[in-house]
Image 1 (cartoon, rainbow, N blue to C red):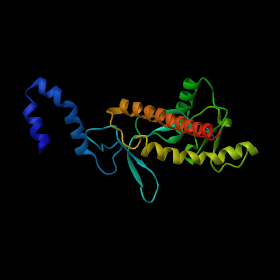
Image 2: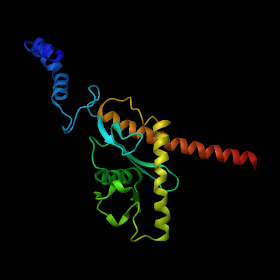
Image 3: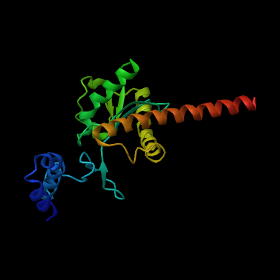
Image 4: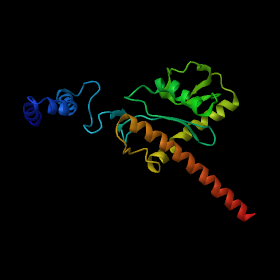
Length: 206
């Protein structure tokens, strides 16, 4: 009813019609969507928000934007943090994520360890990508490093709780990308500060 009323009142005014067109377009998209519709609208103030299936009993769905992370295998430093638009398949974000690692560090990763969601990924050098529960072609070193892959889960939890990855206050898709980079930088700084605290404590004890 409000949509029809506003549409009727701005119909004769070109300036108002142009000003209200984006919002009226979102409202029209909201009114015509159904349960089975593709690319549904979940938020008027943040149209880029998507529904992400988590597959967990306590939280089957999350509403927001995806973030692809790449961290070092042992230290846990974030080397890449991208917020792809929409809700792409996890495997289709791997090539762009590794590309960001190469741009930021100048070094191509020797090996990449990913979870089951990256089966059928888009990275060209498939012999460098190892997926959880993989059995073939594993040396003792690769098998040991592959077990470390699950260590990224608590890191993501810390970024959501301490680094504000769980709630982004920046506007639009550009705000999502900026927030992902800032969270990664903050995580790396916290790791460095923790190492410095331990080093200073060791010096004082010595």
